[in-house]
Image (cartoon, rainbow, N blue to C red; front, side, top):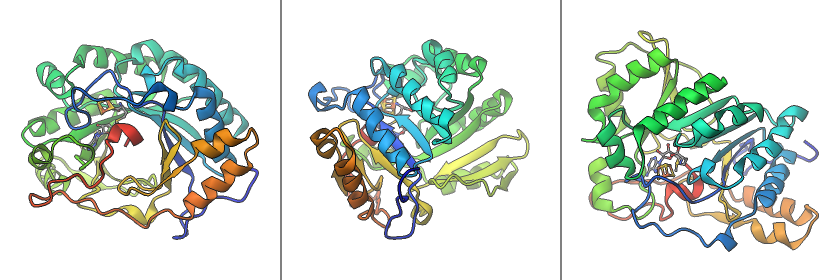
Length: 335
Ligand code: SAM
Ligand code: SF4
């Protein structure tokens, strides 16, 4: 780090940057995108070189962990050139971790290269182990392709965490099965509460919403869940499952407030920085990035943005409040 660190008005040090490298995806998960989703014009999207420079500026300002997400990060053309470039910051010791969140569809192709670039852990999103349900949920996805990708990732030496969105009436009958599967395969599991984002339809979202407090109480009837003090600075709270030895995380933005320890900010593929997943506060970094080849303006804009990081969010899922708390879809900031 060459400069003074990024500290927000609530004394939170910003050490974690999530970068959405594309808004495009080869799936159309029902809770994330509409089937006829319109994507950003390519001209608005930062080039891979610009994403590298922006990420580099954050690393210079003390960011130690970088997660690539999307859309689907691995469908962006030539994505490995960015990942390899960012991997060099691992070699210099400037970065502790480079990771990504993926739907797994392209892992068969990229797992080995990811490992070679320095990636050691990945999150793979998988909401069901049933073929037909998988296609229903992702619309365009095929389960065998994702399971094959997960296998390739394991063989390449990547540690895998499964992200599962808990959906009422959709996959709630599979929680035990997925816990067992993760235990057998040696994967950690994180369950995510569906969040009110994007224009996926308020009515449907209310029906899908399943509070994880309820899930957890239900699981505790069959599994021994031991409180764990494992923390990532993120929204997950972790338990250890005695029977499988695996870790189980719960991301409960709606039933539990996690904002006080938030160490992260999110960058979209157009260079907009979101200071909070649940708020509209944003700063444009594309203009200062493109204004000059030197980084002064960019760094100044980042500092101004961090100085405006909100204290927390106000998500609400309620039958009376049918609108989404945040109008942008998760595919814009990548979760
Ligand atoms: N395409 C990649 C994937 O699916 O892992 C990365 C981007 S995706 C937007 C990141 C995570 O957000 C996934 O685990 C997905 O399940 C989750 N997600 C998307 N929409 C969501 C919503 N409305 N509520 C909660 N989680 C959501
Ligand atoms: Fe694509 Fe991920 Fe959104 Fe599914 S959750 S549509 S895989 S970006």
